[in-house]
Amino acid sequence: CTLSFFHKPRYSSGSAHGDNLNIGPLFQVLFDNGVEIALSGHDHNYERFAPQDNASRANPNGVRQFVVGTGGDNLRSMGASKPNSELSFTNTWGVLKLTLGEGEYSWNFIPVTGQTTTDSGSAQCNTIPIGPNSPTPTISITPSLTPLPTLSPIPTTTPTATNTPVPTTAPTNIPTPTQTPIPTSTPTSTPTPSPSPTLTPTPTPPIETVAITVITKLQGITKKPIGTNKQSALVIVQSEDKSIRTSETIELIAQEGGLFKGTVQLQKMNLLFKYRFAIKVQNHLQVIVCDSKPVLNAGNSVFSCDKPSLSFVKGENIIDMEGITIRAGDISPQNGVSDSYDATFIRNNLGSTNTEELKKGDLNLDGIIDSQDFVLVMQALDQRLDQNIE
Image 1 (cartoon, rainbow, N blue to C red):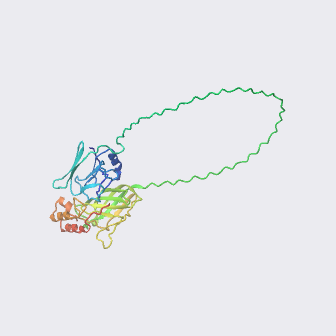
Image 2: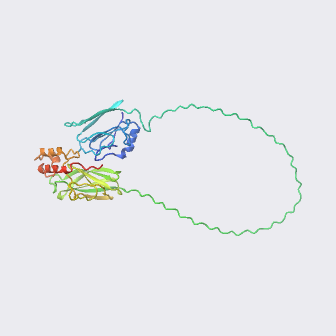
């Protein structure tokens, strides 16, 4: 059996990244040459697919994609399950053990100590490549000889000689030629050439690197924290037609008034497109915005948007999110949900000032896990789930 491995997966149901069409040509080569396994990371979760081709069609002689992003960083939520996804989970760290044999291969996900979710199985190796490099069958052709027709000889014709009389020459009076006047040439008008049509070139889409400065308002933080003044976050940007999707980490720095601000650069952005923008801040639920200055509508407790109208220009862009509040409550390891795990952790550590526990439970960054943090995680139940870009 044959294993291939590369960072970004061709197929993934992870909410942070998902499928990667740029890997398509590589995946096609693997499929054409009978490779059994594609091992990737990138999305921080675990997922196993059934063997398939490069067009998301199940095929018993296809390539089985494994996504194993469970090596230690924050785990992330899953989006909508993609075709041929057999199993996925987002609550367990661990490693995948793969065994390649002569006729079959097997897999076994080994969780870290204290966690129990696992996955194991085996499958047969692909017998032969099924694409352009498949063996070409040998075709044996026995020629059949057709006899040529016999040619009849062409008869030879013997010409009969004829005596031609020689004429008698008689003197002839040759008249003096009369000179004919040369006619005057009439000038011919030259046609005026028609101008050639001007070809209008097809404009090239403006693909540029853009810088985005993000200003955020985090739930429960009303002033600049005294201790911790940084928050890490993941941003995801997707075009309206879904042809462009990119993600980058961003470091948010505390500002006066309890705001956080950071800048991220995104490459190969089409400036003619409209976009959605998602941000997942440490210990917070993910939120999606569709314009550069979102505002919570009166009467709503949770912000949401439908039609993307966010556009970018070359150079600096600003997304000012002061008008909405990013809900706290999805603490590390983040799974995209504010649930009983988050509330229980804070309740069991009330009064703690331990550094490691503060990283997870001190939601308002005041240096202690207290009842205010518990109230924040309970208020997050209004939203409860990450807002995911499909």
